Image (cartoon, rainbow, N blue to C red; front, side, top):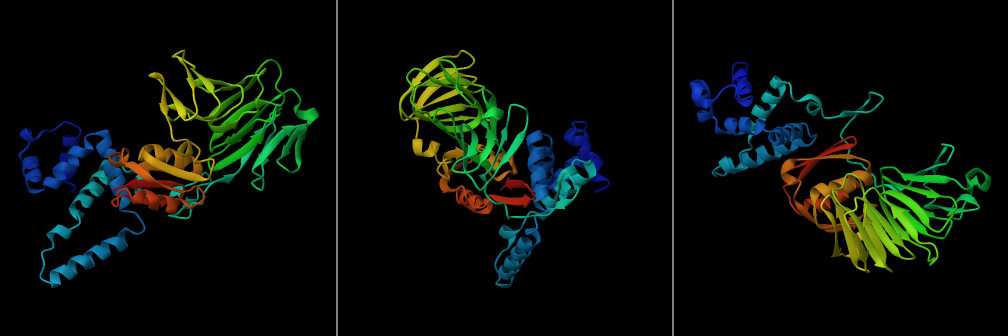
Length: 388
């Protein structure tokens, strides 16, 4: 391999062609798998795919699975059956490992653990619990209050208090100021605003709102996802601003999904009516119940929507309705507070199914794997690699 690696490096970097080198032609002729692997390494996507495959070798269960495969092969050999169709591509694994190591492109991928901010190692672990009720309340003076997971929400009235619980900040501290309620990854929370409007925040979301609505409109700002039950007031429209749209209502129930890492921002209407204006001046739409607006760089459009699916998160469920694995992965990252790395070949796989949001991560992954039994995953601390 010490002799072959320079040849492979020059070929991958485009410095050497098959026409120019007889040794390389002979090598690829004898080992077609090697040529296929080298060709894949020429592209960024191919490199990423092979690094994931190489990383998979470090899966804690890999040796056990390979021993089971070997025993299976030996059983067929002893029974007098052919065994070529059962052969695992060990040569391919050796090539990937050699190229990755000798070219110095393995880096972080070479270790079956991750390091946290304290420099300690976190070994493979499948015990990733679901998110729960947690949030951070930021007062106008910058003070941050970590909200207890023993409560599901807060209420704004004569100050700020837990829903049915203790006071967090009195009226003198928060009067006529803007507050910020933020849910981290793995968190969700509920708030009742001073006008009686109720808002549920999904994971990794932020609501900016006044303690008291002053003037002829009630205005809040949302980042992420929130479900709103707006208290009716014909004299004071309720305005929700996001980075991509402005939503105006008098009194209604609707869901807004406006994460910045999603290509499209969605407003789904349950009852009443809402006016959605694209922030970039790309148009205005009036929604009826059972419709949703979609705002993207291409503009704004309206389509029918399954309301039950839109509100699954609020009702404690994941619902996957012909949804790409790439988009599902982003939802799981927010709720389980993990990072998911997908093999490029499976990003567009569509998933069907439903499972409780309060199941652990492994249970959700088992639902996903039912779509394609070839999907495998390894968990390394807070990082998960999914491939097939």
